[in-house]
Image 1 (tube, rainbow, N blue to C red):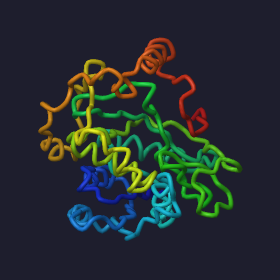
Image 2: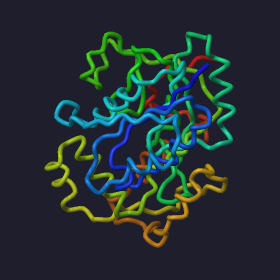
Image 3: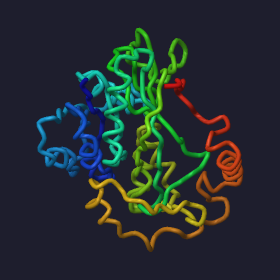
Length: 313
């Protein structure tokens, strides 16, 4: 059995992505790691950051993002497919560059892949998610955040990244253009794996968090429209009050140790925003939904996004 890791990235160091840590977190259990590295800004150091890992398992595919063809952030899915299509493993382990796996889960993940290798009905593995918020000591439990997602798939040419690359779908005879198509696409049949993805995409210095949001808006709407959207906004992202955000008291992945040491914005977060400016998870609707889901439904979301069919395995 072989496992390929894969991902895509651009401007990781400028936008505070732990890309090196993400790759390192699963490197011990993969036979290769393929990353589609988009051409970034002149002052970005992502290539150097990845090269510092100094592993012959890593293969870098240099790309240029076509935001005219792949609109509304579908370029993320297209770039994910670029990396996926170059993978050689039986199983393909996808991590976005702000996602990290704790070392305690590596034996569990590898064992699960071995267990299900010959069970061809299983097309992917679903992981739990822990979404950190504002700092490394807080994480979100909310209807506004997805609790689980597919992160390992079979090496099958009909399985593709979908929409903005959050998930995967089976798309037979895909033309490689419309990553938002739903007709004639199929949810993957998946099994659960007893492992959690640590998602650090919402842990950045407030100014860099705002830059990341503007960059995302530009990938969806274009630079001009994104500039208009953010023109009247603060240059610093407001994480809002942390009163309802769960405290994290466990250990982070070992590979994150040095990255976490850079945390120096504690005095810039935790202030309650003006009325009407709450983050999505702070809004009454989502707070009530979350209470019902967590206290009565065991964490199962009501009408939440679920892009897979879970098999009993």
